[in-house]
Length: 321
Ligand code: GLY
Image (cartoon, rainbow, N blue to C red; front, side):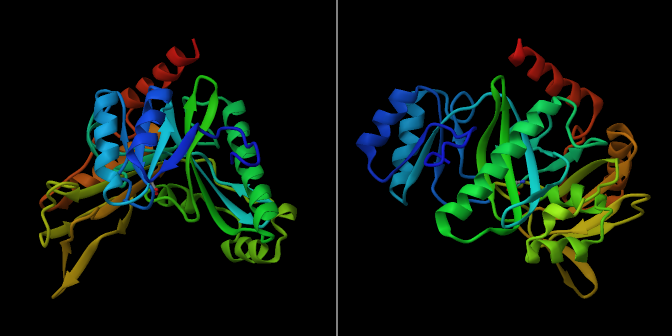
């Protein structure tokens, strides 16, 4: 992104040594610190959050450097959202935007997780976004795909996952993944109206630009039931009983079956998805289903509720001034 001048790129460097890493933390003054590599969404620590001050940011950096390279990035303040797209090497077909909830507990408290649940609105933007925000995010992803082709001589074909923070000066990139998001996939895949095989065929042939990919204008709310103690001390090998889930869809995640019964592992166990005309109704469908899943589990009741969404809207209003 830096090389191709793509908008939304954070100030960042990757370090293997402590002295220059600490100097960069001082220079930026407000940072996010991440191990360079996959950590299941649980490795990043952010100042003003898990890292109270510069000293803590430096200490965490030194701890991570003992195991490998570390990314130091400027900290963005805003609301997080995910934009996913099919990519055929040059053209992109975008899904509606999704908001995931990384924190384990209600009120966005507790440790980071792989994602406790997520929602979409009816249409492509989220309630705290403006149309211009999604247009900017789309442009960033389009520019990135073009740059990938130019840089490697090969067009990227598949799913591109853009994780953004919507700041007062527009969307900024946290990361890209060459896959769907979890839980975000469960929100958007059921909304696809166009034939999935035709879409994938267009992805492989490079003809996505000629093909409108349609989504139903419905809101979705996805909530995960996770083992008690997750993510730090998850209750493993504990039975999960899925009762009447009503109109929701259920997706089994990190569970296993033994003698006809379902058991937890150390990760997220079962997700339910409500799909309806409004977020409010979709949330009720998902929440009612969760109430009928028994086991040593917990979940976030607040995901998709009117009060949490209003908090997001107020936060963006305040930031935009
Ligand atoms: N929801 C976060 C991820 O899939 O990376």
